[in-house]
Amino acid sequence: MQAPARPTTIAEPSAEEAGIRRGAIRVLLANWTGAYTVPSRRLYPHQWSWDSAFIAIGAARWSPRRARTELMTLFGGQWRDGRVPHIVFNPAVPEDAYFPGPAFWQATAPSGARTSGIVQPPVHALAAWRVHLADPDRAFLYRIYPRLEAQHRFLRTSRRMSGSELVSIVHPWESGMDNSPVWDAPLAKVPAPPMRERRRDLAHVAAGERPTDRDYARYTAIAAAYRDAGYTGRTGFVVEDPLFNALYGAAESALARIAAVVDADPAPHLRRAEEITQAMLERLWDPSGGIFRARDARTGEMLPEDSVAGLVPLILPGLPADVADRLVATAVARFGLKDGTLLPSYPPGGAAFEPARYWRGPSWLNTSWLVLEGLRAADPGLAHRLGAQMLRAVREAGFREYFNPFTGEGHGCGDFGWSAALALDVLADPALRAQYRLDRVPAPLGQLDQQRGGVVEGGDLGDQVLA
Ligand code: 9WN
Image (cartoon, rainbow, N blue to C red; front, side):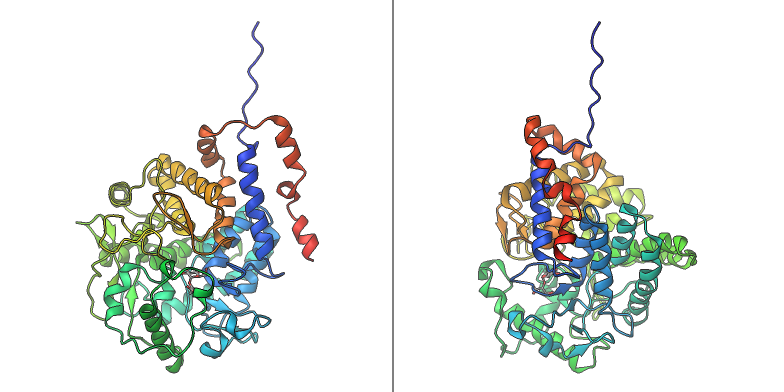
């Protein structure tokens, strides 16, 4: 009689997976300040808004306590009007470590934290919900829900600039995809007086992998004008961005789930999520291109370039199936998303494509993760392959800030927070791991056993060390 086959379990990490996980935790430990995680010790030595949301999503797979702290610390920098600033500065870091620093922004939150005055895509409600799913904690949701609500109230009341349900960004940095070719047209209309200040980023990363001086001069000019207007109203750059609005809609949907747990009313959130999806379809969907595009809210015109931001609405609740199918087709045909490729930030066939320059072509793990989340329903097979590619990128190049989409070569800074965190999240998903394991060689048992004693299983070991 044949012996019964041993059940195969996908919960067992392979040596390769354990190695990636250990590396990711090492980065999160190294970048942890005691209350939050810096994106990068050298290039970005403060707390960034959407970075912290992505980092919380991944950290929840390892230390949910740390993930909750990450988000609560960020909301410690929230303004009275509800806005969550894109940077909360660390007072212990010298002014000249990052430009523009606190002296430029001249902004202080009610908590006393020095902050910037612009925002970033609102991934936070989604992050809070994922943290809760990883380790249910109603007390955490009770604390964060009013803060998330205030964040959304700010967007709703101060940033609905076209009269539709969609919100506008008033600075390219608010998109999170700072120098995407999509911004070239609206930015070209902004005067670029020569910068008096010194850029700090070029001390850490090659100039060819960062925005040009001309773009930096424009970023500085727009931010200074907004600051001088008391951080209200319009700037010379007002745009409805598909990524920002898709996350706004997805976050309203997450808020509905959170509301149900904290005895609040989910209905207004559900209604708004539907209205945002509808407004996205009416204002930003380009049926001939099969992608969502940004609209210049100053001129009312659609912007000529598109980017991976136009695929992120796959994450929107209630997106019609035919629109989702078109997006998948665009991801494959124009962004080359199929076996063996990373997801570029800008289509490789586009005139502005540069494989190694910041947001003008390279692949980033956060935008890949957002598209992956959207693909789970629309095309699970493609989602799995994208997850595998994300893991391969960090295995081969390390936790770099961005990657050449063709060669996988790493660019920007190393030990980058969300690259580590989101790899942890992908690794923790049984369906994605099942796919990833197809092309690995199983590790000898002894090797697995050795790894079990390390940081991988340590979980909150790092918490104790740092406490
Ligand atoms: C400006 C921190 C941030 C990310 C952004 C990314 C980059 C800052 C910069 O780094 O922007 O906010 O100095 O270039 O574009 O998405 O949040 O990682």
